[in-house]
Length: 264
Image (tube, rainbow, N blue to C red; front, side, top):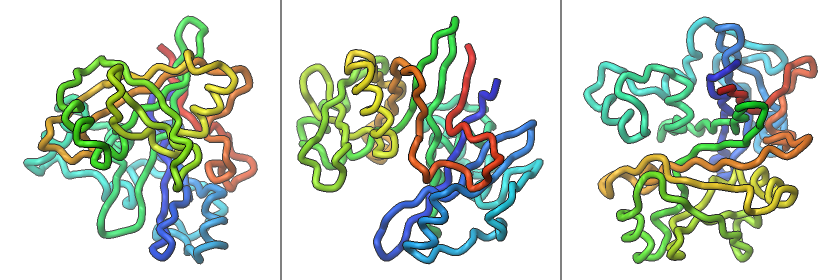
């Protein structure tokens, strides 16, 4: 019963600013495992990406008892005074020491390199029922109208949000906005989850989707860390999240389940 998040590593081409999913990190029998994904091949062909430091061979599984440096370096030291404040902003308990969970919440971006991480969707299993779930900080609040930004400071944890397809978005034809019951627009579902959500809407209908606010930070927090949400939905028959090739391992013999399975 793997309760640990599965983490995907992304790389951004500095010229085109395009993001590529290039690797996957997870726990396997208490060992950290890193493998390259098919997105690395695309990044190599399109943007001349080179193997990542510490992972020179793209054709093997890397296993370690400790977290690989490229990921460890994205975690704030527990000895820093700001550490407890970061956990609070991420909506985590003060003594949380699960590195994958902290990475999943913080996304691990650094101004000093072109990498970040994204958490895989979760499959929640309860009494035989399968539920699709993703958790994320809402994207794009800073670009919303002033009235929406003011309304965002008044909502409460547990409040429900509603999906709105942004058909005229010039950068993402799959863009999904989130609004409250008073039609205040708060931002977007992260674009890497949109294909999954749209697929579920197509097969199960929009009523199968529920989005709630799980955690709120004060207006002094960066807009990118203001509103933490959970989206859940009915898990359709034969559905596979993160279906795109970029998420699939380069290893043909790999157990390729690109989502976390959590029983409750």
